[in-house]
Image (cartoon, rainbow, N blue to C red):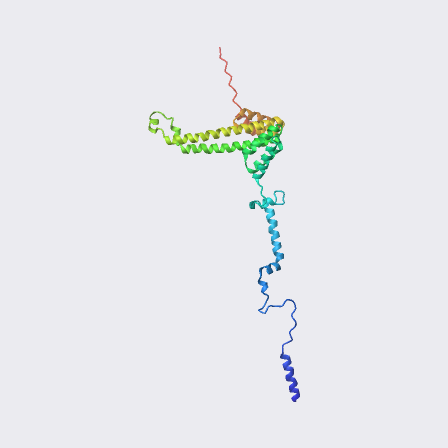
Length: 295
């Protein structure tokens, strides 16, 4: 009995004892619990680098699509142009074209590049000057004449807008000047406002200058479009452009001639009725024949 009790007590102790520890595999754990390197940024980045690189690739592609890079509209120089890494820009292209013109002043291609550079920069006057030299060297280049005429029309429109604004300011600066010519009791009562008179003279000079520039620009456009019609007399659009420019310039006989030639070359025009009405409005009135006196 005593031996049976000892054996039972021994089995009980063996059952409550903890199981033997298995040898640990992999990296040794830190005594404080966990790996302290897990909190380092570069370790976390390394573990998640797939997602980071995927995100960067998406952003890179989206930036290129937004800026038009790789689609034939630009290049890396546009992407980093604000940082001035590659240099360049409209100013340098103008400078390069100017150097080419200076090196060979009789090269039409150089003037073509110079005109394009000025246009990309928004310099209308510079582009006009370059195209005038181009048409001087290539007088039969209808495309160059057409482009020149279009720029001259834009220039005339800009001058016209400035003229209208200056004329309106003139009325605000010296509103009483319209009554300077009043005579009699009204003229004596109003007198002459010297301040307004001085301001009016200054503004009148600006208005007159813009008026001259506007008219000259329209006349230049008419001349250029007329050259196009001489080079391509069968081009209906050339005659229509000439007619419109002449109408804006106040050259109504030339405008009527252009509209008539346009309808002759394009008889099925959807605007035929409107153009015919316009021709009647712009045509000078026929002189009235004197009636014969009855004997």
